[in-house]
Length: 351
Image: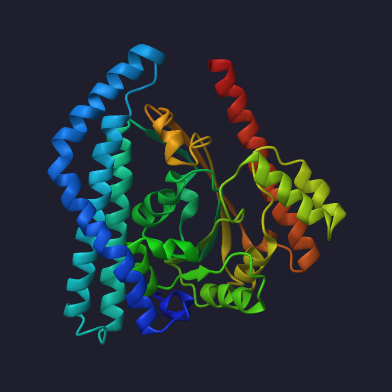
């Protein structure tokens, strides 16, 4: 079953002029960047290799600079080619009038774009991904909950859920990601929602609920329940905020060692919007400590082994009341945290 578009234009309320202004700020620098990096790539690689050699000899850092230069070129090329392809698809759809065809074609292009970036990262950095329970993803409808630890783990859903299983994921994304031109254009053609973080507006929750409506057997909706990437400082601030309104949940949040406490509003809205959907939880270990480009610069991505665990919760096991759902979600998140603790302990013994 194929669903329609419950949230038009990603839920972004702006005029065409505002959209045009943003894209004039983001797209030309991207094109210029590709031209410059392409022209300078031989020099960038030569400098990168020299830096890698010096860092390897001086401090034992895995060669990273040349790899980053190559990945920068791949990223810029993927963005520019992706934008050109999106423009061709729009023209072929008669200016968007063939809406269903445009949505299908855009979804397929999105999978190629995400696959190209993730494949390049795996190849260039010799990264390996091991997945346990991957078959639990299908069939839909599913609500996918995934932890958020790194810049790179945002590519996992497309490459572990959408591409191999044909699940058409709708994403709950932060509004700031509109700064990425391909996500801006493609993401607003497809059923997604770009959330204004921290507003607490009832309308935001309502639109997240709308996003989950109409899921079919080939559909899913995904959210990062933590809302942002984990750091110990963010964890402490989140626990303190929860303690101001709910001491009981704060005590539960305090027990999480490697995760931020899950934000209840978005998950509750998705459960309400898709009352027949099972819940899929994706836990992963390996991207921790790679929150920023500077972390990757220190060599942490080279030779990385990423372990992923996928579990599925039947809808019959999801409680109905808000209070019980809060406890249920914290139980899920505690299970992921315990699994991560085991992975960190195993990694520590191996070193």
